[in-house]
Amino acid sequence: MESTGEDPLQQILRTRRYLHALIKAHVRNEVGETRRGTVKWNKPPAGSFKLNFDAAIHKDLNGAGAGVVVRNNEGCCIRWSSKFFP
Image (tube, rainbow, N blue to C red; front, side, top):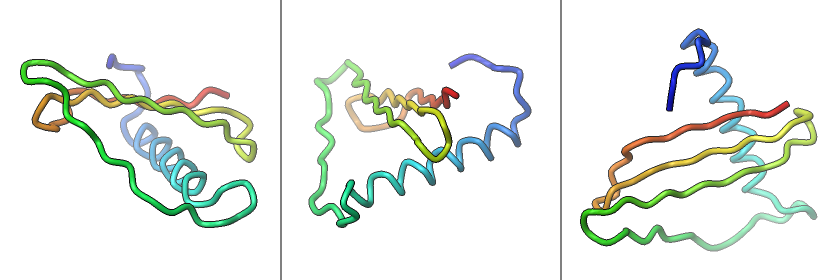
């Protein structure tokens, strides 16, 4: 949630690469079959926040990525962050 000093355009490009890899990883399982089903987000109690996070290992990128989203009880994004770890 703090500035990394990285150029904003580079942050956008890095985030796009990460999201592309994340979507690719979630679309296919290890044997290449498409996953079925949906995941439903459940809102937290009024006046509180919910933190959702995920991480993945990217063999083709030689690293891992992690992301976090904080939402209020109306589902509005309060904060988010993503990071790639070489």
